[in-house]
Length: 81
Image (cartoon, rainbow, N blue to C red; front, side):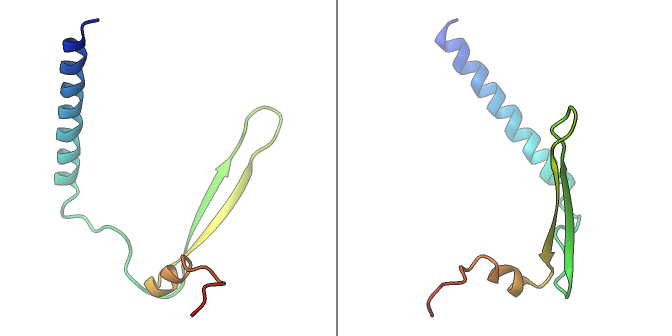
């Protein structure tokens, strides 16, 4: 395959990806994203099954609604003050 053809196809794929991204942003511009700060937690459940006769696991994540509490989770507990 000619190198020029590969470059042209790569540029075309990049242009299509950028245009699709812009279209997606335009359609979601007026929608609310995220959640309002508050008390309590969001609960997110994930399930993984490896298939066959068993295996896999289920996990529930609790994400705080309070932005300060959420940020504290990223600070190591042994962080010196």
